[in-house]
Length: 278
Ligand code: NAP
Image 1: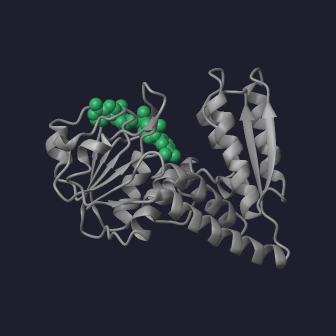
Image 2: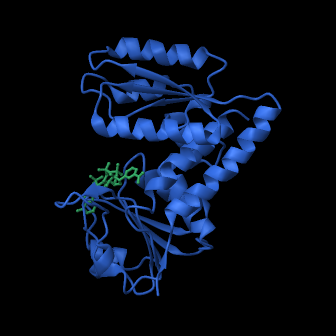
């Protein structure tokens, strides 16, 4: 029987550990503040921002909300981020993506002080990760590492195949797996013989952005499958990049969608916020 990796339970454990840590810090006089900036009112972004605020409240982190109109200029957003960079009481800055089309996301991300870059998207954070130095790590891949570690799944010496090479998931995922001493292969849309390559994996991490893409033709018997994808299917139900029902019979462990990787992202964001105050 496959182990169903319970991201909801693991993320709750992490949040409870953080809550205890924050309460101790508060007693010692350290307050933690996250500034959350949203431009426009994209409904999905509003849900994510709402969930982040709720998590802050639960853990004892103060959240400051900056809700800016869609027509905000790039210059105005840059000056808000610069102001937050200089505010000593603000420990972390999160600018909810995607930004409206008239803004250059790279410019905004580059403006965030690396010391407050709790999303881990700043080039300095990414560079630090790639050379093994201290810095904030992108929350979703950091969450995958926690899921594996807290399920007692060792990565050392394992063949790990990652499908997807985005800056926020695939690439940092590869660097983190390397840090855990896995042997790492990264696949993308130009990879030849994807099924054969994926089938080599002891640990297969799927971040491709295509619902139900990975079937049992991509999975070795006994492999561990981590599904980062999140979509709504034609019936309005959440599903992942992996055809869960198809692969369940052959995997040794798997993350469900929902309730797998998803809840870990916010837990790791909260963890980054606590680290930002230390
Ligand atoms: P993305 O930026 O769209 O990247 C997708 C990657 O998959 C790209 O590297 C692309 O290759 C590769 N790809 C696309 N089609 C392929 C194919 N047919 N064969 C092989 N590789 C292919 O997506 P992302 O931001 O990394 O997100 C991936 C998924 O994770 C999405 O479903 C997203 O919603 C989800 N997600 C979930 C969370 C969470 O908290 N659970 C967080 C972030 C993302 P190229 O580089 O060659 O184009």
